[in-house]
Image (tube, rainbow, N blue to C red; front, side):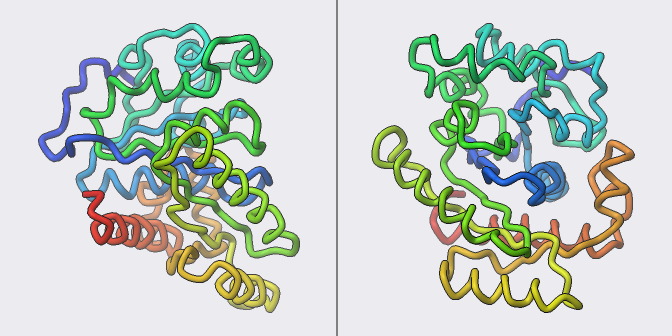
Amino acid sequence: MSDSSRVKRSPSASAEARIIALANQKGGVGKTTTSINLAAALAGMGKRVLLIDLDPQGNASTGLGIGYDARKNGSYALLIAERPADRLIKSTETEGLDIIAADTDLVGAEVELIGLDEREHRLKKAIAPLLDRYDHILIDCPPSLGLLTLNALVAANGVIAPLQCEFFALEGISHLTKTIERVRRQLNPDLELSGILLTMYDRRNNLSELVAADTRSFFGSAVLETVIPRNIRISEAQSHGAPVMAYDGRSSGAAAYIALAEELMARDSRKGCL
């Protein structure tokens, strides 16, 4: 992967990037999978996309083919060392999609952030110079509501909350929506819930149907129409360091993430965000 500090702004780039945090304090809900594949789907639509891997596990970096030896300068350096953001960007094999990978040191960032000035605003300030280079900036958050996720929520315009179609899923989303409201009141009045995304949906499973129905009943139009199915191709793609569209573009998983990108673009267009 080459350093993409040489990458110039795409002619299609809007005046200012739409920043979306993908967050849920519950792990295993498809958050990172959605980050990777939504970013790739948007890039496939001709959009200029940056994915910031803010999860110390670094799975989004792995899923886009960024090896451990290429992660020495990434999101930790961005937040803690205050390295210029444009020097930390790496290109990926997906045209139009760049990444700021997760440093191996990111695991200690939560503790280090506590003692820093304006600790909740460091990501927002760090990526400000990139806003005219990209159409979309996606932030893959860790599975917690700590300072890393808080930085993402302060920097973002919207939040996509993946929700696995399993028992107890709604409880976690309720906590997240309350956090979003607190951040909106105290730190970022522009933050909104862009959508709740049902993931790992299995039509053969009655529980999936029940969770989906309960979620739509409780949250209404906040729930995205697109549903991400259980699909082995999605998991296989990540093990090969590629988005599912590149691994098997004819799979149901690829079709679902393309539909998700189209739905989000349509929602943003109706809101006048594009």
